[in-house]
Image (spheres, rainbow, N blue to C red):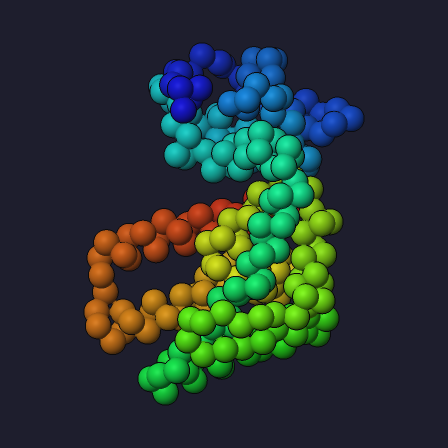
Length: 236
């Protein structure tokens, strides 16, 4: 990403509110995405988060510590231009939702999955009218088309910035239902992430912690929490 290879050249980071939203500026000039789109955010809260990342930059710009800016870039440069495809891709997670695929053994893991995941599937049925089927093992189970369509409805109501957050919540957890539970304030991000990691935590408990896998999981957890924050910022 050669667009990022520049050093700080500005003194003041500002926010300009207009009809399209809140634009982040550097010494009065608009910040632009890698595709040269003006960086205009849908809410003041999101703009403040992005502006703070630019204020924190010293020397060479480091996009790794600018998650809100990266999310905004993805919303403007990618999601906004392929909205229907993104929604279809995210909706498809419901057809292979993590919560529907259960272990056959050992009994302790079977019980832990049921205790943790059954209430979420019940919530999906009650809150969204979408009852998903549960199976054992990895062979796919066909989900009712009407249930999948109902789970997808909230995605159609999201703006591009909300979809950017929802994308990571869904993709990182492997569960559309779990992501909707975070978005719907049923679960906080920490609880939701823990629920998505039941299988991995069980394996670590039984066989010990793989340090490399733990490092990867920590990065994913951080990204999951950031995605929840970005969704909230785009909604405030």
